[in-house]
Image (cartoon, rainbow, N blue to C red):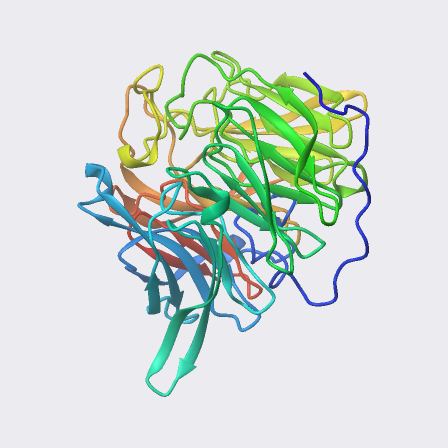
Length: 457
């Protein structure tokens, strides 16, 4: 079913004056509002080395670097240990930019999706995130006479707009200055400057396990059943512009968190956001699907992988009209992170990444490699390299991720590995498919299951 196909959403007024986000490239988990997982900052590259590391006491799913150059992360601490399925406690942690040592933190109430991994850094260097009380928190940091302090600076209550038992999984701002949020069980909402909350409920049974992507006059929402383009006119509630179902497969695959697509939608193409891309969950050969953002019209569809593992939990990476898709098939997440059984129950982490170029004539595979990336990598448009953490070649029959953990840099143009530097050893330094951030000074801030690494030159 298509809702309002071909009907473009109303154009928003000019951008508001005050910044809604912190520095470009370091204020969102997926790099920018379009979720391109790219940055204009150069990465460590050929001179890469481990500059510093620390043990923050948990896994940090997203790290932001503000205008003050202070790294701050959304972290999940485990009571009982992640491998044992221990209880997850979310927190916001501030790090020393030179030593990577934790300086201060504040504990949050547990919410959805590992305690809340999707948030952003606003123009005042505050982490904006939802907690388990279904409130949007603005978490600031400040240096005092007694040392650094992390604290909740402001709070917006959403509890009366969200049913009991539901929780916010992701949130992002739009260019009108509103905050969009999505819950596990399909509530999509906005909060305007006057703190007015407006919501819409998607069909029962459709759940969300990924973040929201935002363009000039639309928001892309991917549920466990369908891809939506949504918008809300000023003063109005969110509404679907169009809906397109996708093949969600027979069950969750090993290496994915939920049953359905594991990708956060990615805007790219004409005008920078004329197309939207996802990877579905077809049983044997998941497909890359690219649609027109305004209408939902199919631009192209092709197998996402030729030789890599048949599935991904990672959002497509974008540069221009090109997509890079890493495979996570077979990756072993902690039991507490996944929802429902997988088919098959286990699989080897084969890995592999592929580049696919898109045009109005269709999709074309440019290269595919065997990189076993164990983090959600970042593409630098400044140096043309894809930066992340990974493992060596796949050993047939191997299930557990063990051995050296390497910083790897891959040439976007050719898919060839140009840098391999060991920075840890699994399972102690398991990257857990966590997201790295490349700061303005060229350093990669990358968390593992128990450490925060600063990799630079």
